[in-house]
Length: 349
Image (cartoon, helix red, strand yellow):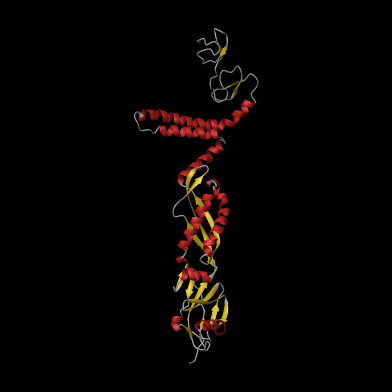
């Protein structure tokens, strides 16, 4: 029987094919010693005989009569070499890098933040991978399908990547305010930790990018508010006063008995209080300078804290009336203008 040469090759015109089974069925699944194998760059060809991997060929052109048939003949136990055709399967594995694979958190990751407490964060980014061990990959994932695409595995890879990112964020104990400056460090930690899982199925994680880590809207609002207060004054006292004013404002919304009348009064007071807080914050620095440079004998305004000359009756900064000192008629001690009893002898003023 005359043997005709057969050329086996695969021109990959897709962007997502990982494994391609050469269709030997069209011309019969039998190969002979005149057949040739062509393997292009970023490809590896795998010969399978009766479910067993015989050999793996990297990029190049091969004469099957001298390359693969001696191996097949030995496996089949043929006495007369490889003059007769042999039945086997040929698989091409794409070893190029598959890029721009997207990942994202389907559910928020709950982390314990040192400043904000329990916070829910979301993230998204991309990664790239490629087949590193063809034999392991075929045994672990491929099976006997005629083709295997990236869509068949990216769902599982995405879940794996997200789980390791959540673990890295939780163990880092980095504040959410500092996460943006630590994304490269997170990338390296996750890439190093997840690499073992990829290798177990014959893959390698080439790159990983964390493009964004987002927070709930209410937390972002609090951060914006804190930034605004930081512009006014870098002081914990300002934050405490603002928190108290917000508590007053919330109390004004009380719908209980008498809430309509009490809420109106508290609401007005809360609005005035917040206004005074910002005024105090803006004047906090000049106030300190005034105290430091106050001349001898000067008085301090009880309203704005500005330094006022000893004989002035009104404050030159805010226009407030300055208190006038008076003396006890019983012991002659100097007392405050608004005092009702002498602090020295207890005499009623």
